[in-house]
Image: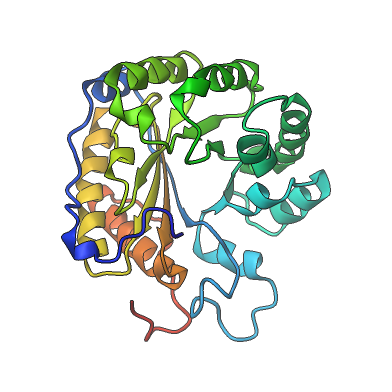
Length: 294
């Protein structure tokens, strides 16, 4: 994932900012019996996750699902999924595995949320075939989709099928630069139970807004292929523990890298911390090549 990449990550202040006050209010409304946790990568192909798969692996998704409990499904961004394809993916994974498909770029980037009723219906109809394995769909807006087109986003959210949980990733800096614009958008999300995605990447610290709109934390963590990635995850673990104690219901945490082969290593580090601190029993993914480092 090249978005937010910088030439020298050692020059970046990776300190997590304080939560926005509304985040605690959102969490305090919730009284979950347990925290639903999904940790995964963005892709499952061998080319990107080099060193992760044992030699002779014939089906990458089937093996991936033995190591992780979820996938941030970027394949659906580049091509509209069919019902048949969704069923094939679903049937290759165990009972409690979850898919988090990204909405097709026809909707978000090419039509830019205009005249998308037909495409949304096609996409929603297809992903519903994940059944109980559908975690949450997410909309990633183009970098140049700005608040001047907020009416398009509002119409999209108003018409989104409520039975399918939705998260939104805002990328253009104008959404974050004006507090009034940002808070108006957050109120829209809150009123429709839309989850506000948090992105932690070196070159776009404004996307690390720490503003939850539902008791769900959907975090897209982009490592810099540097040792600091591990301390960044340790900081995240501290913040997630605070959110858990305040009432977090669901945690969806997806690890990216500029060079994706290290993503399973970072995921394993985070999961080990969860298992130690929270007494969870999430499977820790293993690398087929134990020599693999950054």
